Image (cartoon, each protein chain N blue to C red):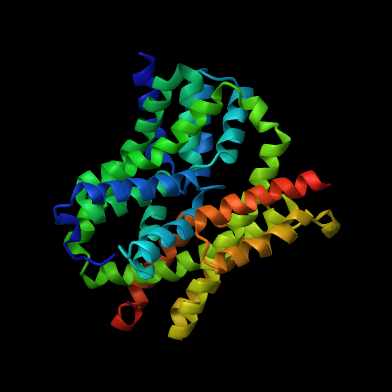
Length: 186
Length: 193
């Protein structure tokens, strides 16, 4: 039965996907394209593109869309459920353990090491985002003149909106609409 | 996360609706994946609802990042459990997977039209700039807070992890592992909590 097979494929993806949404892509490809031939490589590239473009966590987008292409809405639900199941089991167990043993020094000292690390990762993501906004690529290009001027205009506007405490949704929708208007003006 | 027993309290329907609504919005507005959830979570759960504080947000992200699976889903699961037990987890999980299901059902039939659409691309480009502003704001805020504490080892961890992650593309899993061990060995003193 296709739904159960999809579910099981994505349980495996959920277990072995370490390091966030992007890490799930090669695993999904291995299961969906290489093993079961449910999708062709070209279709899988579509899955990859659409998951990055549509709002929502990339890994869940990919599971939903791949499932949908293979077996319709039921397939999408089966794939998403399979993908989330390992996270659910591990997350609840970890949270339970944490509530029981969280006040032990060892656990706290580990988190004391992780907190500054997460700050660094957020900064790293922030710099990558700035580069992406300015040059539409993930690395600074050799030729700096290829800059996307919409990024130069919209980033400070976005920052002012954040500082004016407009809220996340208004900021994102606002810069989105401004991006559209700016693109139309040229 | 603190180890108080809030998760074991009985919650009313209003609470679950609030949890559902906020997690749904966070998932729907996660653009470009990963770390964009941090400013979103902070705006909702720290500033608006006061459910958790900045430190707990970082702990939550650290744990979500070290678990297998999607970071946003992991964060929703842990936050759901922390706030409302297993029911809270299920609520947050459902609210996280629903937005992609709805959006993708809508565009699945005409996705080539959407992907290649000039206006959709322009809209997303603008939103990407907005997301950059959000994440830069959080990054600066957290850096300032950390700087104020004037503790040497955490500052070294931040700088080292940044260099390894940004310039050398070291896998996040290794970084988390290494920094966890450093914390375990050298950050036992309560002043680091």
